[in-house]
Amino acid sequence: MKAEGLRLLKALTQAHSVPGYEDEVRDIFVEELREHGELGADQCGSVYCRKGRGAKVLVAGHMDEVGFRVQGILPNGFLKLVPVGGWWGHTLLAQRVEVKTSRGDKIIGTIASKPPHFLPESERSRVLGVESMFVDISAATQSEAEMWGVKLGDPVCPVSPWTPMRQEGHYMTKAFDNRVGMAGAIQVGQAAQATPCELIVAGTVQEEVGLRGAKALANVLEPDIAIVLEGPPADDTPGMPLSESQGALGRGVQIRLHDPSAIMNPRLARFAIETAIEEGIPHQVTVRTSGGTDAGSFNSANEGIPSVVLGTPARYIHSHNGIICTDDYFAMVALVLAMVKRLDQETVNGFTKFI
Ligand code: CO
Image 1 (cartoon, rainbow, N blue to C red):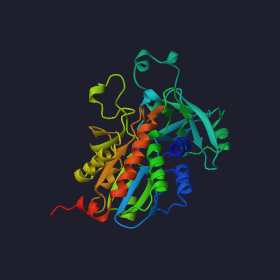
Image 2: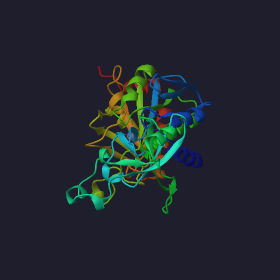
Image 3: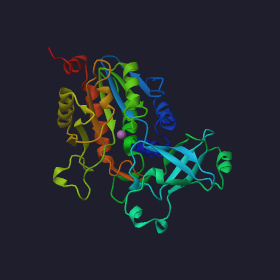
Image 4: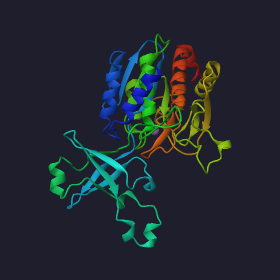
């Protein structure tokens, strides 16, 4: 389980998979689950694998990561970007990105701006927006960039190698939001045996641009409940009081009860917490005042799908260098496996029995 998890996390974080162009993560999902159930996809590109009989329990991550698309090709060969998903200008300058052309070639470049030496003081001291930046892919002219296959709209992804850190279990790279969720969904799909429910593991598209893919997937699958797997921001860094932390590295799987996008079904959330306690799985309960996940879409889809979010906290998400502790990741996988083992029809019905 551990070696498999690390192998999956490495492969998935290195995949090029920005909103609307989730092909590389989807290919890994399909390859890994081909022999573990019945595969399917919806018309937006979200993908799933189902097995077993009983209440429909959806375990879903989102396949996309924050990235960009080519917005313009300048006469001197530089590219302009439009962000897809939330970026903070502070994290972008001098970072490497890769343009994926329609031929499948990957062209590396760096994000840059007018050098500070040429900027007036007023501009030097503020956060630059993506509109003031460009990508240098080494093309001399627009036509050279086009000859290399670069076109308007091509997806652009951060580049950051998979990096084990000195601290045991700590890893650094891009896209832990949400490749931890995808690795988790895949491992659950592979490891779960003879569940009392119909287990559907899935990867959604376009979460980072407004929880879009989850809506279509909910329509297609009509799940009875949704367990959303995420890579939420950690809050255990300088400037944030550790005593108030609800997402510290190494403290276990995060069980999210609330954020601006969703009030989780209280019974399902309690079931998650009680299962973690019974199984002795380290966990941290979270009420968030910002952020959102696919649970925001599932919660109000169809007739309302009870949802809960389980997370592996990651430092510096939406940047090139996120950091996780894999103990939290394995706690997340263990909790999902323990939950699906208990989710028989009666338990699932109980989450929505109001009269
Ligand atoms: Co996410």
